[in-house]
Each structure stands twice: as C-alpha cells, then as structure tokens.
Picture 1 (tube, rainbow, N blue to C red):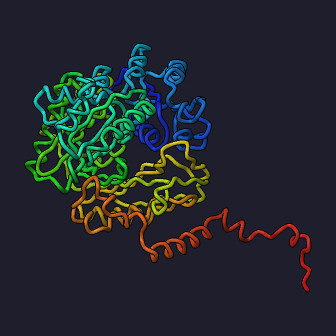
Picture 2 (cartoon, rainbow, N blue to C red; picture 1 turned 90 degrees about the horizontal axis):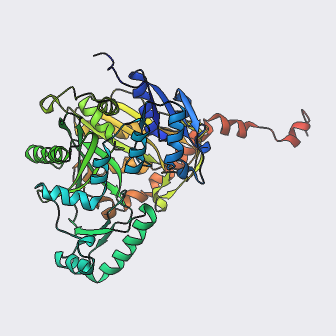
Picture 3 (cartoon, rainbow, N blue to C red; picture 1 turned 180 degrees about the horizontal axis):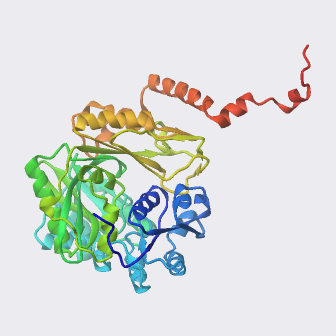
Length: 495
C-alpha cells in the first residue's frame, strides 16, 4: 500500500525523549517533515539530531518549557507546521491546548476536545460509563454532595481507593484499609491533586485487593468506526507506575478477553471517540470495572504494534487527517506474545532513588523480535529534570515463555554506562517464578520486596561486570592510561 494522501506535509512534535524519536521514525516513513521543540538540556538528544528542524524553547525549568502551550503554539505557527503531535504526558491531554491548536488552523493529532474533556475528567468519565451501562466499581463522588462525601464513602466499606478527578500517573492516590484514616487520606489526596493538577476534586471507589490492571487499545475514526486492538497486561507496577507490560494478558480466558475488549470498544463508541485511546480496567475475581480512559498514545503501545503489525502513530496521523480506518474488527489479528520493560535511571536497592550522570557507553541489543525505543545518546547527561525512563526494551516471540527468555537476553545485552539503572531489577522480575507463572497483580512488587534489593551475590557480580565494562570504554581507558603531568616531565628518567 502506498503512502496516504494527507492535507499537511509537516508535523511538529510537542514532546521529547523516546516518544519524539518514535514519532519521527513514522513521519519519515509517511514522507512528512518533522519539527521538534527542545529545551537546552536536550540539545544533544537524538530527537534533535534526527528531526528535519529543531527549535529551542525556554522555560523557568525544563519541564515548564514543554508545558508552555502558548510558546509551543507560536513555534508551530512560525514553522508552518500543518499538524501537531503531543506524544504522551506534558500537553497530550490538555483540552485547552488542543482547542488552541485547532483554532490556529493546525491539525491536532489526537481526539477531539469534547472527548478529552469528557474522558480526561475521571468523575465525568465514570458517570458517563455507568450511564451507558458499562461496569464501574462502587464509588462516592465528592461533588455530588460534599457534606455527605465521607459518610457515603464509609458506607461502601474498606478497602477504599481515594483518587483525584484530574491527572494520572498515580499522583494523589491513597489506599485506605482503616476507615479511621479516611479523613487524613482525603486531605492528603486533595492537597496533592491541587499541587499537581490544579484540581482538588476527589472521588472514592471500592479498592479491589490484588487486582490486575488490564487496558485495551482502541482506535476510532471520524466516520464513527471503532475497533479494539486487544488488551495489555500492566499489573507489574510500583507506586501506581507501570514497569513491565505485555500482551496478551496471561490472566484472561478467551471469553474474558472478548468481553473486556468489546466493552472498551463500546465505551469509545458511545463517546464518539476519534484517534488512538486506551480504556483501562481493574480486574479481579472474574469481574472487571472501568478505571479510566487515556485520550492519547500510551508508553506501552509498542507491544500492541509487535503483535498486530500496525503502526499506531501512522494510524493516529491518518485519522487526524480525516481518513477512515482501513480495516474492521474482524481484520484485526494478534499473534505471538510481546513484553516491554522500562529501563529507568534509578537505584532499586536504595528505594528507587533517581540516579544521574553522563552516558559513557551505549549499545543496544539486536536480533529478530527485539526493538529498542530510546531517547538518549552517548555523551548526553542524565539529570533529574524529567521522568527517569531511559529506554523501552520490547520483544516479540511465538509464546510467552520464549518472550520472557528473549526479554532477559535483551536486557543482559543492553550496554548502558554512566549512571545506575534498574536493568538487574527488570531481569529479576522476568526471572521470578510468580511472574513466569503469570500470577501478578498491582501489589505484586510490594509483596515481594526482595526482587528490588536482589542478593549479595548478584550485587558483587554486578560490580565486577561494571568494572570490566567501564575499562572497555575509551574515556575510562584513556584516563587509566594517562601519565600524570609531573611524571611526564621526567620523560625517560629511571632510578
């Protein structure tokens, strides 16, 4: 199939890191010009080098620069961008920004503003989903009747999950198992919601103990066609942050898979959803409940691409351009098994403290069914300015067991020197008997803290391997071989 005919020839990427690189790759395949914005701390990042045009933006902090919608929109207009792709995070689910982009005559590569506003507000989204007959967990919404909020929450019974209406990423969420602590949890959650999202509204729902986190990828076009691209298992989490994702889920039967995927497509269809989105569910004891909908591309989208053969960024761009989906639900197939592991700059054995440093050596694993999505380059500095994710290690194999072996091999062959990473931690998860049995849930890592710390033998071997690897890199080798100036002035003198 040839390249599609699109009403624009350039796309500005309002993002950074590996997702910016990922989008550039698809833009090249579609014959589109890529424009990236970057803060000075990202000057050496691969996206800046790969883009057809890179434009510097400024801000009080690096993150503030990427959140400055007015500045980014000004850049997009000056660069004559025909479309704008927000990636994920930053401004990707900001309805006001999407509205401003469209008002400027630039195509926003994402859903319509109405869908962002509806599904981005967790309280409105839950009410909408329940109204349309889809399953939601028992809950109490504060704004329904603020004076009875705590009373209604207590009536649901412990355990409870307190959540801010806006935002995501686990920020502001509190699990309450003792109802005497509910009021304090509400106060803390509201404060965090106001700090991170400028919105202190809350709701409380029944917390499903040891649940699985299952999400379903959906696509919808402007003609009302909606399909699902099957589910992803995202239960391996730490502090509500995903670490390892896979598809298909090892915890669903074929009948459950069909039901949950059909439900996700039904929710998207009811919302008149257009573009790529993800409907997330909590699953436990054979029942599943709507959790939220992310109105953007997900970090873990590559596992879906590996099993379906579809390019989700390309589909996003074609849908945004007004083109219909080229396939129906019956034509969507999934084969094999895919796993994604997120490589972070952090120290798991020190309570996951962030780590920093200059990238001294970087080499990616290769092989059939191995894919690396990365936004770092050798010589670049890793700082605490952004999320600590360095790269995503994605593999595909005919079976889950084979995918696990391939993922561990890819992690072992990923050369990264400059600061401590969670590579050994990822390998320990993949090698854990519970994970290999598919017996995971969102509290799996909390219940197995030894996976984070590892063993003394592992640490000793790791230190030895790091020392050998360091001596193989030219900066370290040159420093070791260098003759101090004082000794150099002695030239050939011997005692």
